[in-house]
Length: 122
Image (cartoon, rainbow, N blue to C red; front, side, top):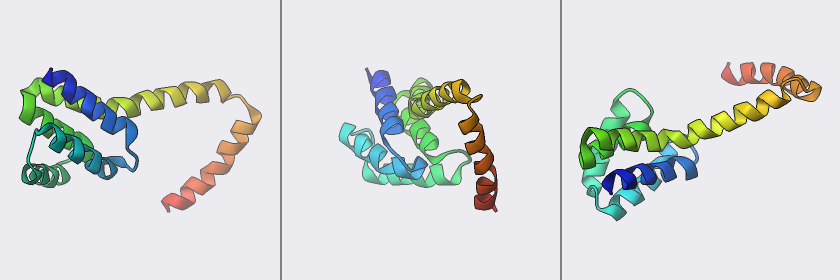
């Protein structure tokens, strides 16, 4: 049961929060405290460690919480849960974009977006 709960909790956090990993922290915090998986102080410690380790902060937090609650398999399921929604959304967008790739308007829009993206990056 803990495995499903870990996966589902982090899947929801990945699916319904915006703003990247830092935007997910409040959703993750609420769920972790609601389930009683960690205390506030333990979660703050995990967030501090997650910020200092390489990789996306939400994935690091999910991995740490999953490992703390259910070992390696829990860590894998929590990590899968946090990034799977984004992966699914990108696959859907890619398949839709592929259908419209030959559309003249879409090509012109992307042609106009290239200098805008370059300017934003610069």
